[in-house]
Image (tube, rainbow, N blue to C red; front, side, top):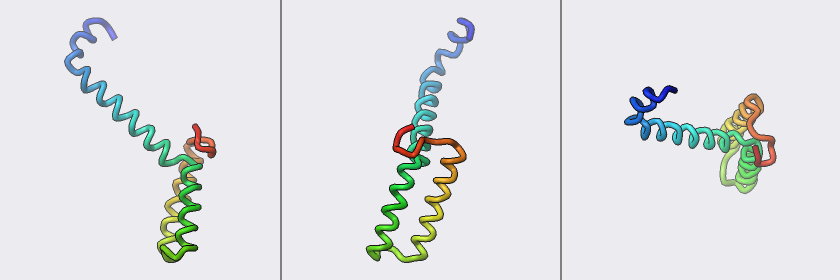
Amino acid sequence: MSLITEVLLLPFAPVRGSLWAVRQVLAEAERQYYDPAAVRAELARLEQRLDAGEIGEEEFDRLEDELLERLETSARRGTGNGDGTT
């Protein structure tokens, strides 16, 4: 950007900075949500809850489908490497 553009847009700097921060937080939240290691850990906890009788078969199936969908999305996006790191 030119110097004149920077000066003219200076009053909007806090808004631009806030939008950048929001984008960063959203990106990190998505990374964590689709992290394969986190999804696998949730699947294991879900199975433990079923075994303990905390949830029924129907709820287990519904939640398992949601988690498997997240895992597929993660694989398509190439998010993470499955060991809890990116």
